[in-house]
Amino acid sequence: MKIGCCARPEEISLVKELGFDYVELSGKVISAMNEDCFQALVSQLSQLELPCRNLNAYCPPEVQMAGPAYNKNANRAYAESLARRAMALGVQCVCVGSPLSRRLPENFDRKLAVDQLTGFLSDMAEVFSSAKIKIGFEALGVCYCNFFNHMEETLPLLDRFPSGTIGLTVDFYNMEQSGEEELPLGPYLPHIVHAHISDDAGAPDKRDFLIPSRFPIHHRRLRRLISGGYDETISLEIDLPVRRTEAIRSLQLLRETCIS
Image 1 (cartoon, rainbow, N blue to C red):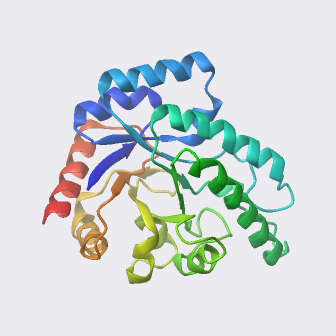
Image 2 (cartoon, rainbow, N blue to C red):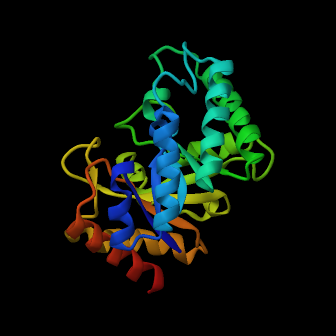
């Protein structure tokens, strides 16, 4: 299994130095870069021989997956723009979380919202499949948004698409926030294309490296995933800066868990 770390562009040299297999960058950050900065990033990754295998944080808040501000044409244009850059980076999977893009007004028609999300993901699939880039839709914790918070909601959504069109990103932090930490993963394993893991430093917007006292919990949860046959990629999805000691400790746990 390949193990990566979510990071800011200015941290990629450190990610390489610490021994991660790849870096996971933010889609919305990559999209917002001017062309000179983006080309410099591509060159730096090449020189470091550090793959950018995945993108998280797919889109900024103004790109709405569902709700009153849903705009199919704008969403499609964003997907096309980001796909071009993802191809240049060699990205293999794009993760679709982006909570600010899926917060619905309390009385918004949920059936309409699901139809809008279906259109959003259909356009993504059409754009990114031509670049051979997978899509991993993510159920988000109830602390982040109010639309698709549970893994059990994702399978009916996937049924709206041809088999293999849309995959899942399993996020153990989000599962815990939504009370699904012990959910059996068997039904989801055929669809999982990527995994995220993290703890937090006191708040959901401060996701961080793994806390040593919780290592046995993380080990148990990861073994459930791995014993089911998952052998793709897993990233430490953090909001705080990359820190040497904490990163090395977390990476060591993940490596030991993947081979135990």
